Length: 213
Image 1 (cartoon, rainbow, N blue to C red):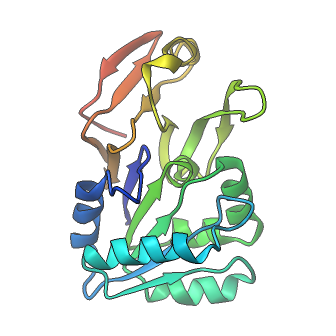
Image 2 (image 1 turned 180 degrees about the horizontal axis):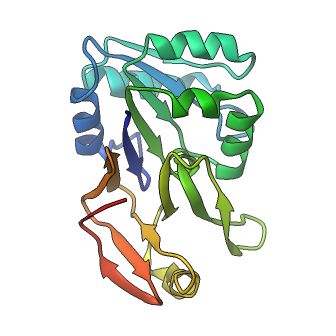
């Protein structure tokens, strides 16, 4: 059973969620090999500087090796995952990431993975049953289906500006909201907050600390 960290977002240049990542890294199998799935943007985050920033960051947290999975046949990613103690899903556009994970079958690999998983922003949203997203073209808020590894509906990059929409959605389903720098952690049926987190339920907002799913 994986331990899953759902980061509401992070500026990786300023390392604004360092404590969350540090806990995840220290809890993974050692010596630690990290596998990054940079598939949430149209460009696959192939820029050297972005990859080098993550590599330097993760090595500073104790990773022995940091590898990037290239989008393509599932066999290569499957082999990399067997050697990784932690799988990290980057931010970007949730719909792109979810579609790509399902298209080549990596969603099944993640479901059966036994190490630590960290999803940042879109990566976190993709790992949940459902997720709240904002359309970039018209700013419309909607709920889409994720992979379902954590049985919740999640809003990342939470700010109070979206409270009315979240309260409206919460009339029919509970919604967990996490700001940048904070996270929800899921393991063995227990969900708890690291930092600031909120639960929207039946049209109301409350501070979230922990629950069992």
